Image (cartoon, rainbow, N blue to C red; front, side, top):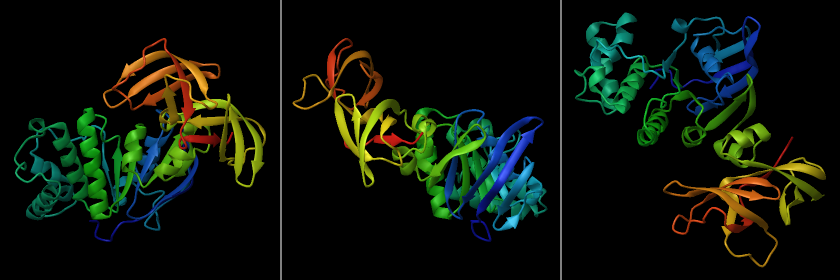
Length: 355
């Protein structure tokens, strides 16, 4: 754990320009001490530049960056108590695991024996006891990842940063390593900034998610809030493969509204929308498919595509209101392409999207 305990990170109207290109545009947010906050967004949105601004690998063009209440805006990376785990891990191939982890304290002026003792402690913490003498090339991807984390933690930083840490791992290992990172962050009460473009990864590990688009923050909040109440069409579409569909808001009463989607009328929170045309975000799992027509208003469609993904089926369904992307857990009774289906809506996963 950092000697002084976890620290906050605060951005106040931070902008980063490269010539005429604005990579980060007047961004403000806070990472509370002891929390894991993920910067999420598509390539080129500004998330990695934001992480590098925290680390001091980039210097802000405007605005203020504070760590633990101390203004670090103009400080170099060496003068900030921040460590980063890079996407490539950046392990020294010619050094043993122990020497890789002990490298930071050694170049910081610690005695070699002390640096090695610190490295042993962090390797034990990450379940790597017995691997000290191995070379990086003798380790699996997950083991290399843990060595990179140990090397970052050995410096006892106030803030730990991860830049796309799972991108080099296969799908099964990604899940296990993200669970390891989350467990370590909570056990050690670390302040963590985490960058990914993978929505599932962000939902799984984060206390809060900051969704970025075109160098700005599109929405910030807990994972459930972003998934269930997206602030705009971009967030709805980016988090969880939402279907963004045209609907009509018929009437408002208090916080609720009557919303017509095709032949179906729904009772939903209006989220500030007025009567008339609106956008609905409908999650793929909120569509309920039936091969027989229920005795209530529902949407008719035709299966255009079907894909078996082990735990669920994915369908593209053609309807009068457009093409729908549907996830169905019933893998035992797949519906054939070309079949007519009737579509109802679950009582979750349907949201009015402010525009």
